[in-house]
Length: 72
Image (cartoon, rainbow, N blue to C red; front, side, top):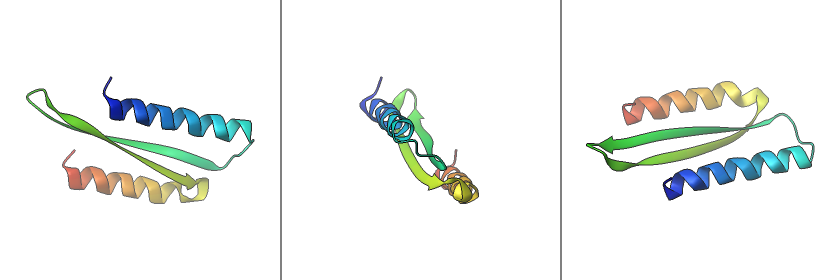
């Protein structure tokens, strides 16, 4: 497992643990993964957007824009 994938999973785990142990609700961690591989060589990029439930539509628009710009 690449280091950046591990860091992304670790961040998500810490975020989820904090949210449940402090009884926080209404806040989401949206992870975006962009794979940049050609002929088996490359890397993956991970983005985390932390936003309230009422901003989910904005996060989804950002996600789509990032995918469009990256060509994925």
